Image 1 (cartoon, rainbow, N blue to C red):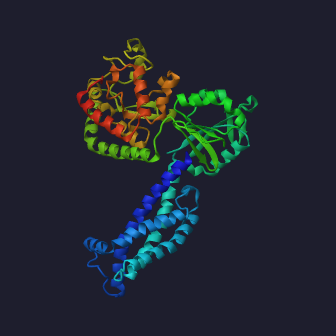
Image 2: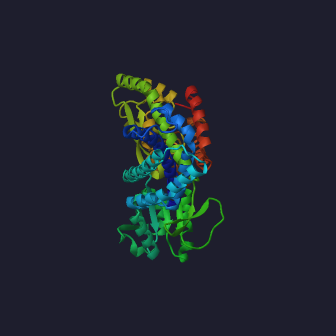
Length: 485
């Protein structure tokens, strides 16, 4: 849970440090060139001019310094533990580790110069390079720490935990979570099988119910993971609770020091010394999710920029055709039941939601979804927008905000979720998207139960390649208007 995220974060910081060291090499060339000129120290070897072409010529003659210095720093910083539990370390401790690493990297840099007989290499450049590298590495750590902590304060990447157990180990676990608030973990409440504990507070967190109440609680609260910190004697009590979480796509972890299991989709990890068995219903590595989110930001930003003239034109036509707002805003359910406001271009008359109850008998969709082919509430421009899926374009802003992804199960209404069968709730275990397998397979021509099955198939077989295939198919579906109404 945390160790995997910290390992991924460590690799990201290594990449950032590598770029910082490369940037320091670039800056050092110009600074040393300037110092030689100001101090009248004469010309620097291989430094023909103080411009980019001059730098490229210098780099061609001294590339070994850059190639050797970057891994030397990464290895030295790794040895000093800079990349381990980065967010839990103080800024002073990180700075001290960087200063210690300077001694090792300076020695290795000197060794490279000696072994490859780089006698013409400017000693002033080397000294300038070392100083700038140290300053840049230290300077980069503080804004990075601040940025990560700021994201957590805003609620991004926050994991909501339901803790089962209130014994000594549970209390230790809770204290550990509280001590590391910058890890983005938030305890929603506690569970204890003693009926007399209901409503009591432990370490500032309220006991919400018993083990048998977990299915009810995960319906009423936004829970990302249920962690069982329980005695061994409780093993026979938690079976049903784990299965209930599994059915609904809620990740579970068990803190007990028993043995390593060798079964599918179960892995052993630990949380700051607490052994955990994790049962994941959605398997994806942190780097894959990072790439997915990065692509969401890049593509949604590009599409918003490219399609902004079209969206402005649509907004103007909507305003001229009928009274009411340009955008239709509606509360939808996102990841693990989080509520967010979904944006669409208004394609219906004003107060369309109030008129829906008079049309419910004409519903052509099975299940808790409402849809009729010739909906009298739809405006003239609205029919065109729906047929071409242009009404969905404002959801690119939902993607940019992080409420949605480009590809994922369509976000349901809260009232629809209330009517879901237990197995159907697992589709909430992945961030919703603008398009999905259902969207490119006929949409309104598909029965509700099959729609739910397709979403679960997407979750179980998810990959970045699958997302690209769905996006490719979406392009042709939008052009043809297949399944839209």
